[in-house]
Length: 323
Length: 291
Image (tube, rainbow over all chains, first blue to last red; front, side, top):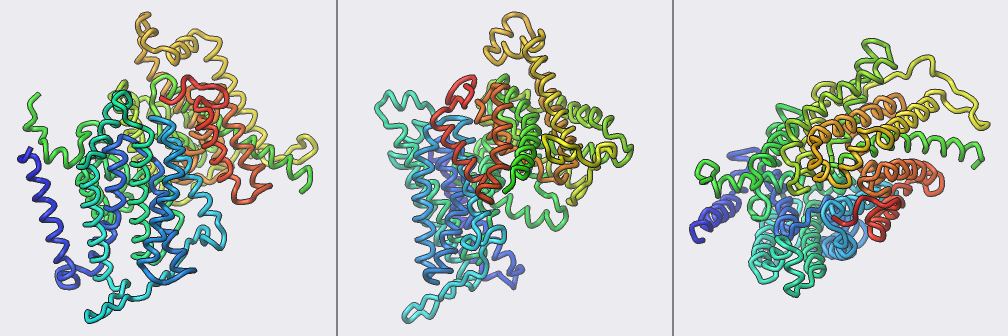
């Protein structure tokens, strides 16, 4: 077991170390644009962690996850516009609103199973998309809400934290991600995490053993939605702009692609998938407008030949696998 | 709001519903028979429209195109089933979702690469320009033709399914495909046939809708959710249900637009969510509930 854990620990340490010093290279080693991209990837990672807890660890694949991401973003945006320009408050409001929504949607969705669950979460998400898209002045409709601004926070003796500064925004995302990652690891490693796996592997067995399967699924759904909402709220502040596209089902689909590309049910896999997809999206989009086709092909390949994803290939190389 | 306005909107809803019906029929049989939740089905519809736009632009023959474009999509559906979908039969249905999802992405992007991101125009046959008097209102001739054609094709499909030996095999397969296999029928060939036929139905819908709505790369993504909703409302795996579901969704969408502008779709989604929770087998009773 320790041998298996080693590559992950190495990856975790290297990734966080590199990210910690990344802003130092901005404008020196690389264009500051890439620091921005890194922030976006890190924020997306938080949503992917939550998605993997639901899809990978509980076996519930939602096709409506973008709704929670979008809700968090709109929750934060509306707070910034109408209530207060305090970032912590906006993040809290966006996250809490999403948790509440996830509780309702989760309560209703987990009554169905398999493809019905996938389709029902899709229907709920489309509902959310339509409401935001046609929300008139409140949601800004098709155009979304722009120029969201936050007040810098004064830290006594340490100066001020201006959230709109790219470096500050980057570290905010990084700190948020590390907290989210530790939380996610803790959840999947806990007794509750084991019951999630029990439900995923054999729902009937879990029921016979006396577990309240519905309650466990609900909890996983709410946790997962909360991660997405928090990520969405961070996204809103980072971009200082939100649009209905954040709730569109194709974004939910991208979460699925990122997760399976990297390796579902591993927590680190989806992060690899997300980073690869988002980085190459930027890189490839400069050469090929329809870069997504390469990912579509890669994705089909992964589904057919490497269902454990890229991380699965690292952990259990097919050429070393005995048949 | 005049009676004429409501009637026009009702007919518009019926037209959209009829298009959706052709898509939903294939979607529901493919699910019923093979357990495949086919997210690539919208791409077949899109390809039908693109093939048609190019063929009509080159040849000017709309009716010939209505046959040729679905044939082309049928060949593609054949390859898709034989090369990709086939590998995952009997596995976790989720893998099918993931695979067809990837296929949908590839086809959508592929179309944009080949045809460009701009809207393609697909002209209706000039003979069908103008409008005719229908139930006291002036209604575009082309839309009436679409209605007639869609219902004609749906009727023919229904006839094949309910009155022929092939239909008997398909229906038995939906009920219990292992039994059909045990009776000496090569169920895999039936799967291929149904996948091809379903793809062609979606392509016909694409050709017919071309002159009504814009032919653009996202049309498949836009329609697939509505098609799934039609199928869910009717009950996954039932053709009759898909027909009723599609017409219901089409009409509800356009009449809803009159009553609650902008929020019609949102209202439909809520209604569908309620139906799914109260009657997972759909309004008209699907093959089975909650699997």
